[in-house]
Length: 323
Image (cartoon, rainbow, N blue to C red):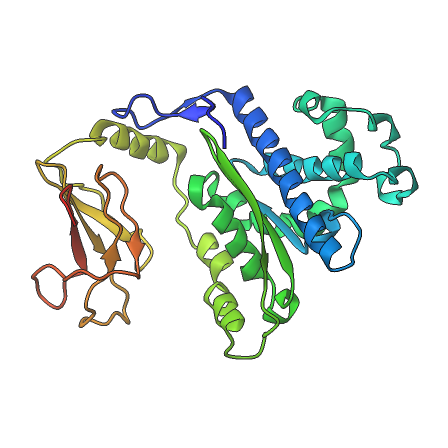
């Protein structure tokens, strides 16, 4: 964790952040260096207690996924991890994977954030590892762009959607999570060995099997229409006593959408029903925010449905008060 003005929102009346692009990249890569170093040291200490005296490397991850502001940075990040392994390997001259990289043996990590020669060499050397361990995780990011906080979980969903339970069972997935400002962590997920029909792993992968088809089913619109939508967001940002006028017809079934914002900036959301929706549903919980700017459905809590007919969609009210 570190204090940095890399990507921040000093003006809360604006939809958009202030971004220092160069600093943002440096912060991301330096956080990756630090997190990976700490992770490797912890694993090595654990292994030594078990009688296994060797270093942890990228090869010990079956998959490696990242927070993905844009996909090229993810590819550079995997190359960055290989650079860390290279500099940490006391026997790198004997390791065939590092062939042709000997000239970089004395570089310092802090001097290489924008070194094109280092970047190019290690992206080339790590290309096979990228294809094996990371490329599949970019399915959603390639289609949706930067999803901010959820991007790393979109990467996880992308992996789970493209491999069978049998292929995933027992695998270790490395995860680098990052937030500007900044805070970052690197951890790993060990997939269960149980890939039998009806197992938790089987259910998770089955729930994601239509991920690609859902992406493919999106409606294509002209750039001008996108610009109009963004202009509408800018014009209505932080408005009170406001009722959105856009159609919900293009939303996926089950999508939550904003119904209205009252004069005290309390928000009401509803959910587009699906044909198989249970009209007796007791309601869906929401995460409450004192700023009332973002509200995420949560299965952990439940609130009563608003009065209405059985045919109406589920709805819940968000307020600024105590809960």
